[in-house]
Image (cartoon, rainbow, N blue to C red):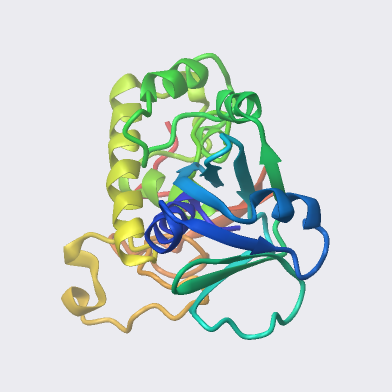
Length: 270
């Protein structure tokens, strides 16, 4: 599933290509025909993101809410747009570009009240200027749930997925199994600030890189990481491989039905 930085990049692309202009919309697949008809010909006022949710606000004050889920994808292109291929749920066409949405878990039009309901059930997003990290902290301190699970709970923190949670906990030297209520305020501040830094860089580059300058392939004289997810990381999907810092084999386990990765030396149990 795409992590939050990807959705913020999608919002920026929509704003650049379609913002402030009337947009033609249709649903070649037919599953969003009524919604596309309601959007067709309207001006896109603002493209926004909150966590993993893309929010396209139209002139009639309704908002197109898209959640890509595991299988959803967006493709962009210049005009003239080719004939749709595959199950295109929604096609947007502007003055010079088009965008095709396929396979999202959610694609719906929301009234203003519906947008508020959505936002109210999401935690703070490290990529948003209006984010309040204290909101997440208050929830974290009330539970014995492991911090690794809490960081994946979108009602606690909106945006991070499995890669960012594994990497930020490694970078801060925190055992992913540590109960939330045992996390110190200083540790939480460090986690939040690091998420802001890492995810902003992800928006800028379009990939997730988490290793510090001294641990890059060039600095260490090692081969670059080869993985479908791309990016240089410390522990994510590196189970059994040596830690880049201490050489201890990276551990892997399952926690709350998701794969977990950490270094038992750099992230000691407390």
